[in-house]
Length: 308
Image 1 (cartoon, rainbow, N blue to C red):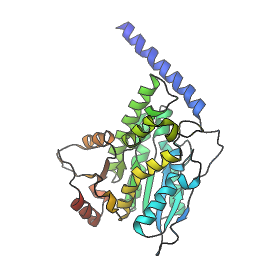
Image 2 (cartoon, rainbow, N blue to C red):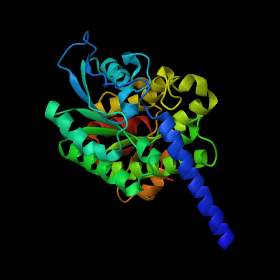
Image 3 (cartoon, rainbow, N blue to C red):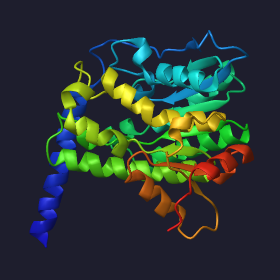
Image 4 (cartoon, rainbow, N blue to C red):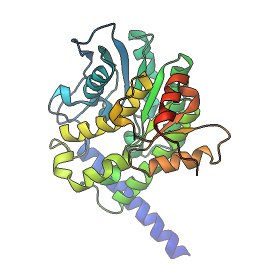
């Protein structure tokens, strides 16, 4: 018993030490400071612009992308503008290195600039895993942020924590720990976001196979931790269908995308739905309270949410 406990402590100590060393080596400093891209997209489209907000960490900023147009915010804004045939005004207040606790301040900054956004996308969680934060410290700021936005009748899409077990510089047992911790964080994020009335998109399985299969193409050559342009295009492609649906402009090509609905009193508990989403490629969950009746009706006509 003592030997087993000693081995477990030794493995944990080794994992923590390796994590700290890798984190220091991969710290996003080589490219210098970077500000998230914002502005108006789809200027050729008619009508007043929709207001799209971005909160989160370096993935929301697009750190590692070689061109500003290849960052997630730009890709989502352009995609939404085309889907809606309207201009889109993007305001991105994400910060490189941000943990979930930064969401409260980011939301205040966003609302100061844009008091009435239409849709807000949140990409957060990776730094909470990298910095070994407690799960509760990662979840309560996300819950409060989504809840505050929903009280303002703002649609919210949360892209949950990616699978850090795909990061090539991580070796075992750190890679397994990063994978397990990422999954736990992503599932917790899905639960609290749904309870607060938001939508969630699972990035781990959507992007994980791509990054494992082609690490040279999917990871940035600058630090081998953040996505490359191709990686960010894949992430934006996974998030965009939910953003379009949240804005009220679902695309025809997304008719088979499983926008599954969780309703109170359903057969399966919320945690079950969240875990299923975190384990299924491209799975998207939508709290029924967060969807206007017209969008929900249109979606129900296209797909049949799973119930068993």
